[in-house]
Length: 180
Image 1 (tube, helix red, strand yellow):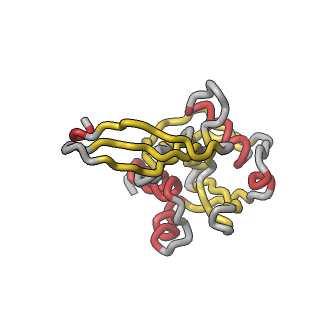
Image 2: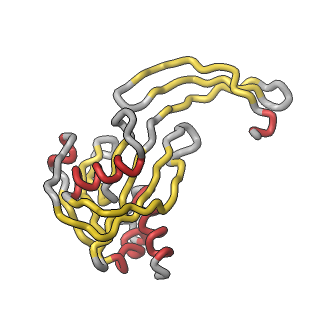
Image 3: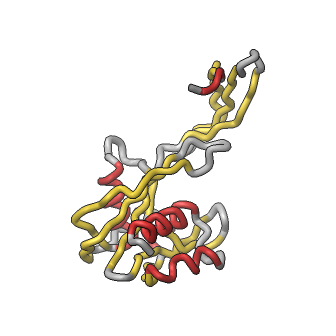
């Protein structure tokens, strides 16, 4: 495991609200010393909410891109002790005003392995019921919910309308699961 690479240390550079930034030191197979900037993230969840033939997406402002993005309801694992499935339920309620009787895990992926350990788990939600949205952040207060026919999802990815990784992956996994 690791092909002879060993982590030898880590120096904290910044501890933020969500992420921790550090410089990590590693030793290579022949004794080489490597330093890498690393970002530690608690992880996230995302939900593909299928309502009949429509997928429920949210359009919200993303400060890091200074743009509104069309994406799956999602959020960080920032509630201590909360498991991933419960976090997914919570985010679906907070952002889309929907709850689902059951959530099926579609898969997990690492968002950006060049520098960050964030892992996102994607769930498929069906059998949806309306509930009251409970915005938990300023961005969530201003988001809009949009329903898109699942058959149009691949086109929205292909034409660059949807570029968010969790949304691309979740929609393509759902299309594959549906055999489309």
